Image 1 (cartoon, one colour):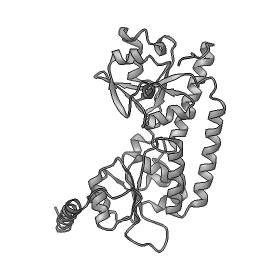
Image 2 (spheres, one colour):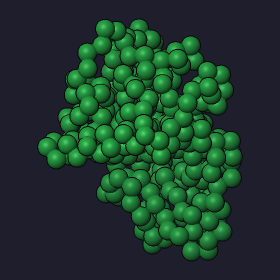
Image 3 (spheres, one colour):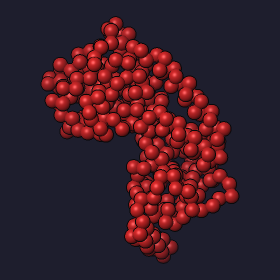
Image 4 (tube, helix red, strand yellow):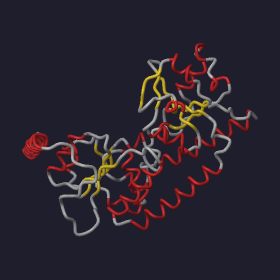
Length: 316
């Protein structure tokens, strides 16, 4: 290790101790401690969702305002960061003090679920940080866009993005009558156990944006929880939403398991061939990409209903 790197590591260790010894979690939206004479020009998104919000607002022409991107955007984003100006930005491996301090950002955009210790260290050094909440509703997405628009000096751009999303959401709602009775479950199972998403999750937001009911939430489940086959059969959703392994794939191990497991043959979604496959990048989105995911899910379910010619079930 070089002398410079040794000194940097030692300084970060001191910062970490001082940050954690005397302070709790900083309040969301805390005012930046460093005053800027203008909008941030060395912005670092702490995660893929933050990067997607910034990309929507900045556009490729504004990519130069980003100091770097988390390397996860190349494998887990529904936005294409591998082309154009985005592809030329440096990548960092994780949300940790060392790589972020080395980038000398004048603004860090992160989420409430990221490492609190890192956020505390960065704040202890007076680094401006915006902490976003997850998209538990469409209003959260709108609010985040408006908030970042103000922070970046892009209020007009944010207004246009929000107006476009509002139109798309209105269109989804207008066409949701046939889907409104469908109890829909997000489900994943790699062969070692099943998981679903109840209330207070982005998957719950996705299902509701597509005009359907989250069967897990209606069963009283919150957050991401494990579900065995017995519980899955008890919930018995009308539609099951699963993820594909990569952005452009349509195959899904979870779908294969659902369709070939004898114990699950009585599931309504299996019998009616109502298993919708979304790219994992869309299914796990925590950004405006949730609207893209909702449009794709709604279109897929509408296709299923039209193909079967069946009347959507009427369940309490």
